[in-house]
Image (cartoon, rainbow, N blue to C red; front, side, top):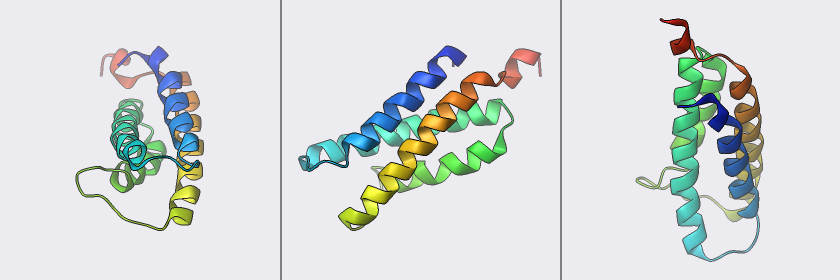
Length: 108
């Protein structure tokens, strides 16, 4: 994955998570599960390639909680807090990982 894509993925994930704080149709939350899981997995791969295991372990729970295959059902207020936390983590991960060199570019 191109490193220039990193900040946009983080911003997209953060934005989608913050939009979810509104009172939206159920279809949006289904879309959100797919999108956030995909973004968290891509970010996890980028963290692994950068050998940044702290971000890897921060992103894996996001992929698990938002996964659409085995949905985890929580109260709306709980999801609101988790969406804010995910927005912060994905946003910071996007910024931080875009500044780190990809370990595969070092010939390893």
